[in-house]
Length: 240
Image (cartoon, rainbow, N blue to C red; front, side, top):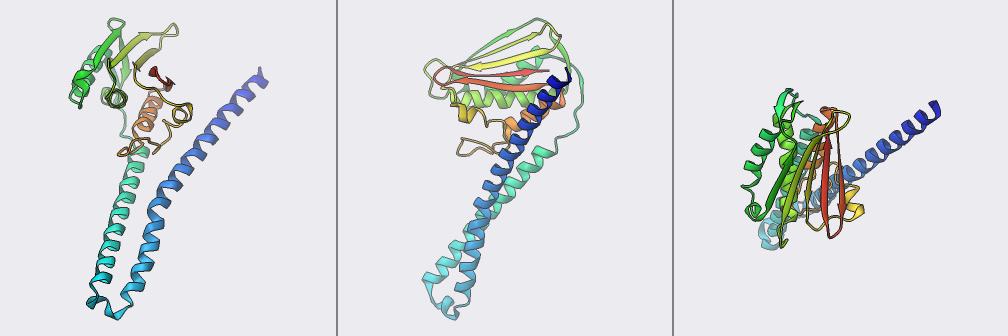
């Protein structure tokens, strides 16, 4: 029995180590993407400014202007990245109370259906009746909105888009929520990274949405997982 516990602990430690290593790689990548051009441009601009004739040279003046604008943009991006990290590491204190899941789903759908192209999607809900559980309703709504938002976005070009929400109480008296879409699905190498902070495949994405979801669910003593098959869709499962 002790040997099995040690094996399980070792596996958990290994997964935790891998998660930290992936996070460090992402952080390094994002920071280097901003720092490298800032360092290079500042050196170039310093050289240009040492040329006394810069004020009489429109071409050099334009180069300096462009360089300063680029430094400003990259600095702003780095500040935005740092702010995202701050949000990820400083979640507000949770205020737990008795929550009706049906009300949470209705509130969430009211928000999600205002998203672009959401009106074209068929939202199916299959809940066990009268599910009451202990949670922070605002935080749970935030988790669900993030998951629905991702589903709506991937279903944009689908012919018959559908999102199915299923929820029930398990045999060990835990709440299980499943949100499935019939979108394009994900490759395994992408699926393995979606909960890593700042990892994103979206051009305008911050990469913190699902990471925040994971932290919120962990704070509710639960866990969240994703399953996906290319060409069939994705299912997110939450157990609290």
